[in-house]
Length: 280
Image (tube, rainbow, N blue to C red; front, side, top):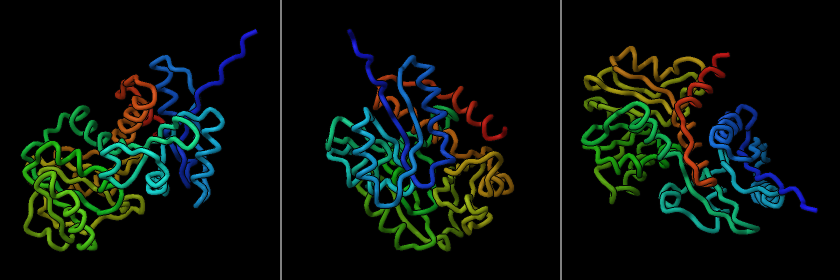
């Protein structure tokens, strides 16, 4: 008599986690690609990630997405790292290959890049790009942006020293520099990406009015049911395209799904699905 095979389990771990759209996204990817799996959201207490991952793996857990505030913890927990995860110093995707055998990767950067270039057809080569913030969200996207060979990439942060150090960490990959927000007064950019959490608090980084070149694009890594404060700022100051981070969320999820299952899902219909769910 054959025993029914246990279903492959996947999850996102974070704190908080109730708001996560990842279960909806990955369930839709699985339906679309004919993959049999279960994807859930798991609340993990601070300091408990190692135990939570081990317990999940023992229950036929095959892979995890890791979100705030555990991306650095997952980096430390992984037994092997992709080169892009090593660069980013953070992991948002774990492949659970067995007990005490976890492979760590990061898909945030490629998620942003695929949203910009594939979904919105934005050319980054020889463009002047500004990245706002110097935290983990920004660190994770620098390498793929520099691989597009922009004219320059400037990282600006409230604390200038953090931006300068971040630029130094990636200086071997291309033209990158760091500065404080107060040093942006005479600069103009073609693409401005907000990697700060200001929009979550309904706030804005302190930006000069003349920051944007003609036909500039602005991108907020935060997303919501309506335009974020940063998107509203972009519209007011002449941006031709103001985007939020929903596409990045779905694209990074698609990359994780591909790493786990070897099948690349289509993202456009899923982005539209999540957008509708936000407005419901």
